[in-house]
Length: 196
Image (tube, rainbow, N blue to C red; front, side, top):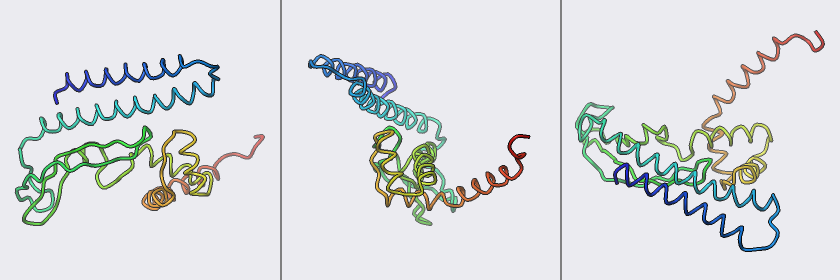
């Protein structure tokens, strides 16, 4: 799909979501601020998902145009990689679950695989966006509980993740978290005492 078609689809989705809110509001009865806020955020998340889908599809097109070769060289052995189709991938993001297909290349010499779009988007080998990872790790650190962190993610941004998935993300980020905590501790010890 070309950029003009992608943009048109995105615009149609945004108009459709505005209509959903309008129809919901016209259903009658009193709508509290909390009710309107909940509905608006639900719709905003769908719009954000549509924006991300548009952005990912556009990046796929740009990546294909910028790639100097139809079949890239293997980053491990330098051999010629063969096209392996367009497997789908699902990423959990702060806007919810985002699914997309991307080009895959396979090296027959060393068996390495390559997803150029994953590399471009910064999602190679992960199932969560970096923003969602940061939020999950932050909540787990602040609450000291995976259950509380998962509940906080659901309540604050409406994203459902499992405790096990969050645990995996925290474990993968563990070294970075420890370094951050150590640097905070050093910074705290260098502060002057209160009242001075």
